[in-house]
Length: 256
Image (cartoon, rainbow, N blue to C red; front, top):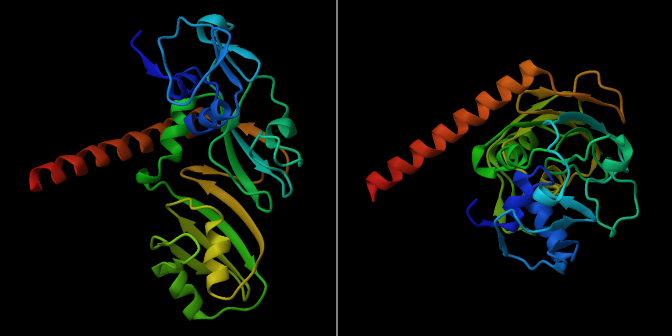
């Protein structure tokens, strides 16, 4: 095996996403041959690697089968497994027999669909911002809004705190104080920040879809396995996104 960055290796072994791997490495929870690993290190897979107290790869147990779960995360539950937030985390909530971790995040005050997996590369592909994958939410705010509010949300809102303007998105009113919004990006607390910039406060926020995976009638706090049909469609969508990205890169190179 060729040398590979440690975060990518942990992801390929189904331990966690690369982002989560970086957090664990930075927290000193990953060791290589008995010493604490550093950020950016490379491995070949023959080392004795331990992540958060559990052996990985050649030093670990037999590889387990791939898992992808749809979870209905309740409000008050966090997605991170760090010690910074004493609230219950979603890993402890579902208590799944195989180690799984969240694909991206859904903030503590929000609820709804969260994907969890033991497939690092799949998680990375779904979270990749450049793939423009859709995520759908139902939102209620603290006061009635008008057509101008919907229009501004659709066209993109300047988030001064982050120094960015959000991508154009799909928004439709579902009530005097409620709306449906479909995003193709995932800035930190994006919907809440967008509403705040326009003078509104989010009362409730529920994610109901990620790409082709629907929350449906899944009860709060419950989870289910993604069906083979859903998985097949998801993989097709990821492949199409990769093909489109590769084509865009080729076009850019030709115009240089």
